[in-house]
Image: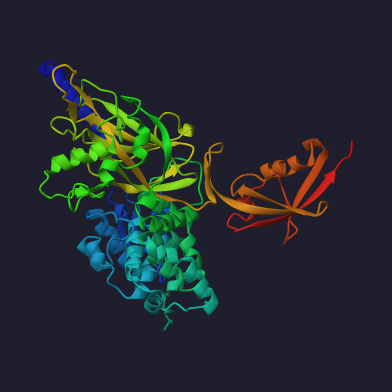
Length: 188
Length: 389
């Protein structure tokens, strides 16, 4: 390999890599909540949502105005949290949550930022689940569901009902029958 | 001002509860959740949950399908009962095959029963249970030698199996294969007791270096469908128990093989007899429990299925017959076996009807497809039309 051949090879490699590499987009999207509020979000962050991904118009010019993505099922206060989550997940991805849950303390299962993120009112947690499901954001869904699971862990049926305000609509016979059928689960 | 309605637990779609929340729970927590209200009561039978449970907690062979929830329940119930007594949970029936044998009397059959020289030896008083040598001043090796003389293994009646001799110790692979109890079994432990010849100079123990349990079945050809981790064997005559990392399903019709790797001991009987390595085993146990009779393995279709008892009433004959069908097999087989009672197959037209609904049972349908796959029993009525030639 002579010096001349070496330089020629390097030059060719540089040209090819510039042609092949897709530059990171600086485009933003405008996510629109149920109430009509608009939130500018970098496209790479917004793409965490599989739903948003499918709605992106790739033919738009780079210098065109940010595309509006309507999200009629998500309220503003939830959308703000969702965007916060997606931003953080781009910078410091959430670790995989082992199944079944090893602990009822969410702090022992995910990084601190994420554990703090889900310290919200129960109704807000459910709204985040619905948003994560609707917008198809797997890590958000995993985190919020793990949180609900951690609230179920170690509780009796009555305690679970109290925690989530679930109404017991069993007849005493039905309840006894199902309890008997599932007794073996206690022995696993 | 808009009224914000509180988002309740009930608004979470069932698919999310099933696929995400339930998977994160242990079985008893899943059962607690299922007991909260009617909508969630089916959660404890959720297939995906038990499929994932089996994948992570039980070693299963690659077979066509099994009723996941039923299998898990069967395994858990069986293993709970197997913890009662070690001996009653020994599943070995007989010897299936073995790699080699030295003298004919040192046969693998000897591994089915614990050696008398071991069982008659009382470890607490270091004397024989039969009492004749309860003298504490007698040195231990003498007591052991006496025990083996009484057992007969130091003479012409070996109580152990011996492999063929080998000049190389480390590379040798031997095995002992067993048939286990009929049906589908779940195995969680196995044991081996190497043999120590107190009557030979230096009182050697002929243990293998390592041991492993593998399951074979003709359906899968020469490769085992299960192999445990490899365990180290102590070179001493004591009952060594090995617990499997995950309990493993065993299909009858095949063999459970205890694989013995490497030999630790050479037989040194003086200058005339050539020194060779041997493996000698006094006893083998394979422990677990049998699953419910209604779960069985069909080698033809390679499926573990649930067998459901069927009662067929024939109005023309005013008689009842009893059969078993697999939940995933076509009713065709039931038709064939029923027809064979009534002469040649060509001359008999048989139709089954469900006794309670009157629904006609098609021969191409399966119990699972028509919704009675989980029934405890199927009741049918047979309408027979014998065509006279």
